[in-house]
Image (cartoon, rainbow, N blue to C red):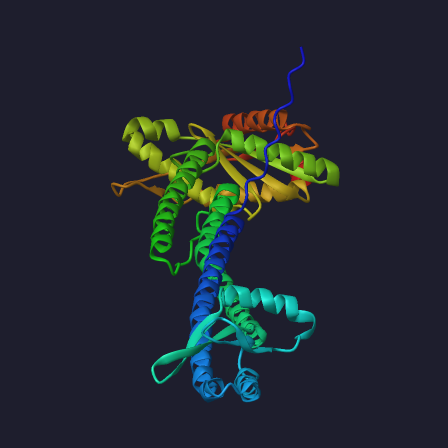
Length: 427
């Protein structure tokens, strides 16, 4: 039975894009509402203004044509109506007698291709005709009826729409600018915080810190995060020190601070591989204290420890920078000489070590004891080709030196150290 494929997860949107869409929506809604409000308010104001203006024109026209209506002078009435209505926003002007008969009718000439639009605009602004009575000696002798024209209103409306659109455009630009500024103020610090968190998780960069933010809450968040990073950095340093200490303890002798047998054998293996590749030589010196047990039993373990520490210090002082000395256990030490040009160089160093032991060792209580070393020397590749055998052969040479003459050194393979040919060959 085949399992249905796992649903594909859509990538989550970034905070910047979410805020951008939200701010743009809010800004767009605010601009649209503002535009609608301005449009409605402008239309109401325009309607009231146009209606009042048309009423004033009708009233003015009633006074002007009064005499012409009284004397039934239609020509004069038509001339007066045309004179007043032409420059004003009047589409039709009608003079009626008390019986409703038309005495004068005036109509504005057609306005061209926008006439239909003008008529619709006039119907919106002027829903009905404006009436003004014509009175003479307190009696009503006629009525002025006017219908408004939208010619000037269209120009005014076009200018108003252009101004409103310009204001809305500026408002939109300003809203977007403020939105982006707000986004930068919020998203910028959060993005920096996320970058630092990623660096800490990926690279363990606990030394990174979040810079201050302009917004109080984000700045407090950054401060808390920095405090957490400081604690983590402190813990990391502590763990590194602990690990380094444990690693040192695992690879070094706690008393003398010298490397232990495991480190010595590992370094010796690498030196033998390098020497085998390059055609060089490696020497191992196996060292053992001659009177350590007597000193330890007679003066105590503290004195014995002091002797071992002093021997370790003297060995360090007699070796070359690239050589290695280790404590193998008890009073046994081992020295690796690499690289080595000739066997005589190993023997010279062994002699130098023996010379360095001539001075008595001062104990913590002020007493001094004499100490000496017996040294066995083995060479790669002359005596062995691996580290284990090389150490064993040097150890055997050391026991032979201790048995024959304590405090001396012996090269592996030399059965009779007193033979002149051997001594000359070693030198």
